[in-house]
Amino acid sequence: MSQPAVRKERLEYNKLQKRLRRQVGSAIADYNMIEEGDRIMVCLSGGKDSYGMLDILMSLQKTAPIRFELIAVNMDQKQPGFPEHILPEYLEQVGVPYHIIERDTYSIVKDVIPEGKTTCGLCSRLRRGTLYSFANEIGATKIALGHHRDDIIETLFLNMFYGGKLKAMPPKLLADDKRNVLIRPLAYCKEQDLADFADYKAFPIIPCNLCGSQENLQRQVIKQMLTDWERQYPGRTETIFSAIRNVAPSQLADTALFDFAGLKVDPDAVADAGDEAQAEAGVQQFIPALQVS
Ligand code: SF4
Image (cartoon, rainbow, N blue to C red; front, side, top):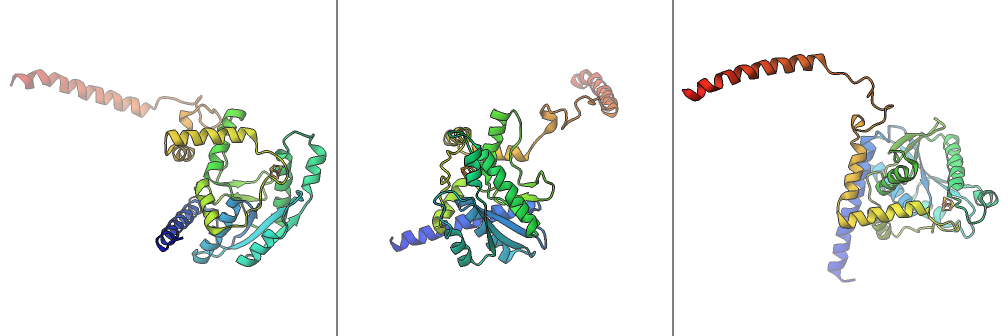
């Protein structure tokens, strides 16, 4: 590569890194994701997003005004061909404390789910359960997950189209077990930025199809819909994400979120309107006189 091309690439990388750091910093601040003394269990799948999350959190940790710990955790689910050495080597190299949990959920899933049926539901439930218990074992105060803005938007449409619910994936959540707080520091980051960042950093990505399962078909459909929209109407994805952050319950129809039954006119507003009407009538009376003079 020529010198100017190297310089240009370097510049692009710096811009991208700054943008990701800024977005992660904003999400952390907006949702109070990290507090003084937190011990954060960073879940690593070996995919581009979780590598990016760990990298950015480690760089923010160096300059943050508060102290917090990061512990990387990967779960080896014993999928055939899982390259066991990759993550430990990487984590040693970047110098972060880590644990690899070994649980053969692959065999359980294969035993329980009939051939040809999607295995992701049970597999993720088993993984989630193991990770949550492990977080308690190591005294983690938060669990960081690598979902990004596009995952959140896809989930919104999946729930809307297939579940009849207006809900997505929150940047911060108290888990159902009420013992774990989940955070999603990449909530403001675009998937494409994370993919570019992973390329620049040459993260040793572990392929995610080792289990032989296809990515959820419905999610693929939504992904394609969003890609088409974005091509046709650039900026639409960002607008949808803004909408998730600007909800007006009184303009929807959920009786649990807004007290539609109790809606009543405001007597003060009625009285004010009466005064205004009287004043207006007074002005109208003078208009002919003003026109004559
Ligand atoms: S793709 Fe494979 S490893 Fe991932 S959730 Fe589905 S079954 Fe589990």
